[in-house]
Amino acid sequence: MEPQKTGKRSIALPITLVILVFSLIGNVFLYSQFLQHKQENNYEKGQRIFAAAIGSQQYAKEMQPLLEALLASKSMADRLGMQFDAGKATAKGQALTELAIEAASLSDQPGKWNEKLPASFVSGVETGLQEIGRYEGPLNEADRAYLTELKDSFEKISGILSGFNSNIGESRIAVIRLSSGLDWIELAEQLQDLMTEKSAN
Image (cartoon, rainbow, N blue to C red; front, top):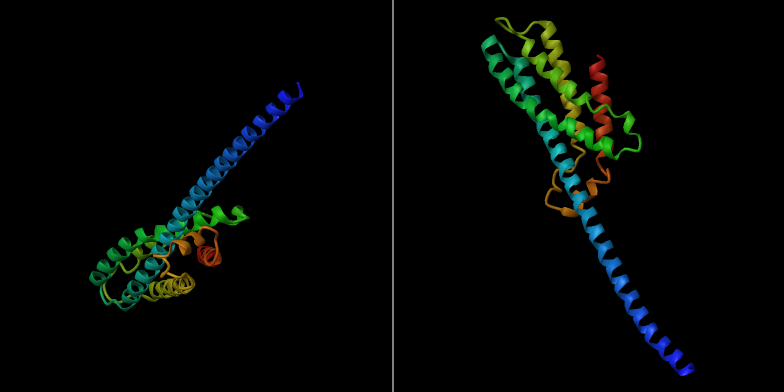
């Protein structure tokens, strides 16, 4: 009876080892698939963040010369064309909202983010610009003061956003890195603080 028991044990051990090896291979494969899926999700999130930051930069960049031109305008006819261009630029302001949404999703204090604030700020800018200068001749002092303050706001926005590296779009690793919040979430916080201040005023 002993030899039979030994024989059974010698067959059972290799079978067990084979099962363990296949189990380990399966686990490693599933884990690698999980990591690959996670990295792909991070890359897609990084792409959204990059697009929102670049769009925000473009919005601020386009608004500054428009505001300067409005300040220098001499007639209502001149201003109408500039106001139309400002209205078109407003569409790019949506990028500020997208940036705030992405920042809130990564923050350990999501409650401190007002995701509606950027849209309210951009909408307020558009409304304000459509209402000024609806009269002949140069701008009055009230409208000039409003545009000067608005121009200062966009210079600050542009200054904050200049801290975002716009040259990383071709680097997959750098774009994935954005999904962790590194190198940009502080900029989004500064933007929110600025827009909160300006909205309060």
